[in-house]
Image (cartoon, rainbow, N blue to C red; front, side, top):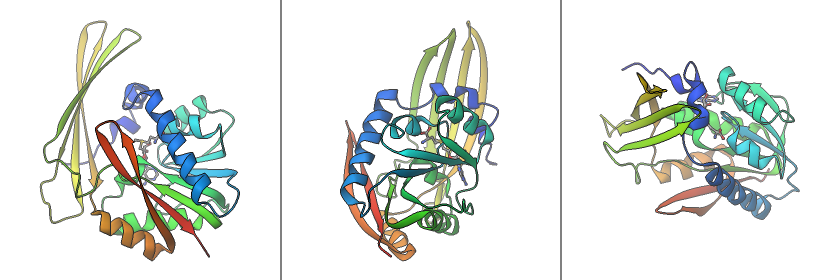
Length: 245
Ligand SMILES: C[S@@+](CC[C@H](N)C(=O)[O-])C[C@H]1O[C@@H](n2cnc3c(N)ncnc32)[C@H](O)[C@@H]1O
């Protein structure tokens, strides 16, 4: 099935209703800030958020850093700018983008999941490396790895806002465990004052083992440290990757 990526294009207006609560972004960003302060080998003032989306992480990180965001989607960048008018946003592809500037810290959060083959995965980390000053740090958190992936997992999230009742039904499925990706299929049940509209979406996402993450990060040139991020029942590995050279 062909990818549609509608949550980042024509259905991007649903993005503010999608995903974690604001408090969870704030909690995660406090964790990221702690890692940066602990592992960076230089004072961290500037931060690049690669795949910044609608700028929910930026909203929290700008309290600590001078933040720039990169994203592929102009629609998502519009939202990020509205939420964070004082920050800089640039449209770019994380596989190839070169801003001609370097930063003290780089964050690669959930957007790295869209690197659905090894070539793209490696290219994205090279982009992070190229945008760091010596002593700077990349923080990367895999949403899912081969070890944590749950075949055919389906989650249903109802959200109500401004006269809209939306149900996000998200299914993940890996048709071929020997390759480097899986598929996410989404149903959006949108009721505008009771009138139902059904939309669908499809994404191909990367799936790599933790050892592959470690190896690719090291081969990119990073000194790699690992920590855990605890979110209730879910626990994630967090990579703190220092550019030593
Ligand atoms: C889940 S959203 C990120 C949300 C973000 N963490 C936030 O704080 O709002 C994923 C983003 O990845 C972006 N993305 C996907 N592929 C990309 C690529 N090759 N380069 C840059 N951004 C990409 C999408 O456009 C989308 O905005």
